[in-house]
Length: 291
Figure 1 (spheres, helix red, strand yellow):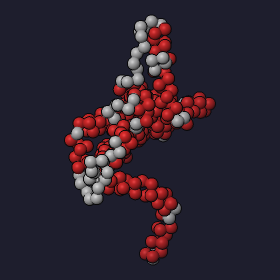
Figure 2 (cartoon, one colour):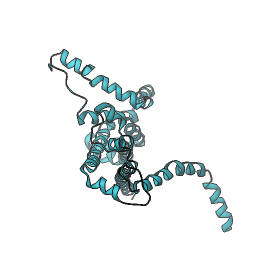
Figure 3 (tube, rainbow, N blue to C red):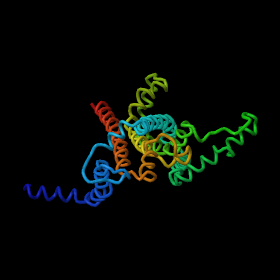
Figure 4 (cartoon, rainbow, N blue to C red):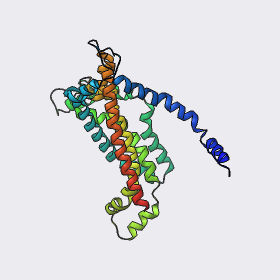
């Protein structure tokens, strides 16, 4: 085959990717580059961007405890949410993937996916209705005499973690169920026939084979939890030390757009670094399984 013909055929093979590629470039790459350029703009006393480039906005992010502390707090919360989602998603995904009843699997899938069909704002306000001073939980606790007065359940970090886990758990369940569904039943029967207990079968067979799906779910949950701010703001208020809320304050209240861009880009860089590490672990594990 002539080189020109081979090049033409390869071009035709990649041609269907052009619309999607142009769409991603227009709506992701271009805004990201614009955000980076804006983050390097110096600002005047009124936070208006000035001509030229300066690293001052990034220096402020890393040297000011108000911003650096928010980045550390957000990273810790995202890691906690990711681990909790992985632990809670595993048994649900296992039941979904191994159930032999099509009716049960359909109902369970609807229950898992249905929260994604509801607005995150509606779900967040639902938690406010449950945990408010005059809400259902406090009403139940005071009614049965556990506490004398309503508890403040909406201001603690534990509440925020619980609500964020509730919002993001379906992503982990769906991703992990797909991975667990690919495990051949014959492997489980072979492990049992060789005398392995269920715990040993889980550690030696199920967990290693499900690790790619577990890492994929962790990447999705971690990425979303790093940038989440609507749910924490509606549940715990706007004074929480989350980087997303700091970005919102800088952009919408202080009108410091270059500072908000710098903090956003640092948040994006941290998320990307963790995602690259998880992806590298997944590729290394996949090579180990197939070697």
